[in-house]
Image (cartoon, rainbow, N blue to C red):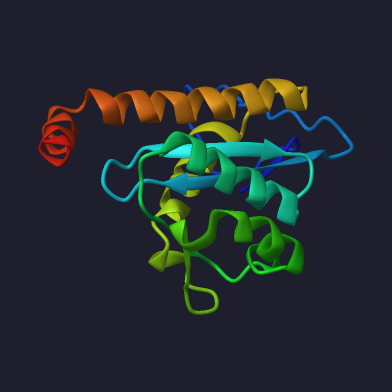
Amino acid sequence: MDVHLNPKIGPDWTLPGQRREVVTPGNNQKRYVAGALDASTARMTWVQGVKKTSALFIDLVRAVDAAYPRAKRLHFILDNAATHSSKKTQTALEALGERLVLHFLPPYCPEGNRIERVWWDVHANVTRNHRCKKMESLMTEVDAYLDARNAQRTASPLLRAASARRAA
């Protein structure tokens, strides 16, 4: 997901007769978030980066690997971004051997990738019309939103029951 310091402009509301101010800090800055969505629990694992490179994707795979140390296989459903299949990525992921399985979606198929809905939510609730003047503040808000999303998923009685059944 791309995060821009210049806010995405979108629908908003304000009291009648008042005007909503949207901060545009001048030169745009960008940061990137790579994330993985657990298909069973909807829990997110994510990493941030200054560039959208193979290294960012590799960092994500390592974060998921660390978050699920007992998993026999880690399945990643991916779009066709070059960072997912570069030589650098292939070399780095060989260390995980057969534990890592990559599944590629057809070209341009955002509806087929459930994590795209999470990115749309982040944009709707954090980056659209935001008022942050510094990139660090905006990225802190992105992290806080994703942390709260994970906490909400963990607190859900249905998800706790499903996790308990899987653990048994």
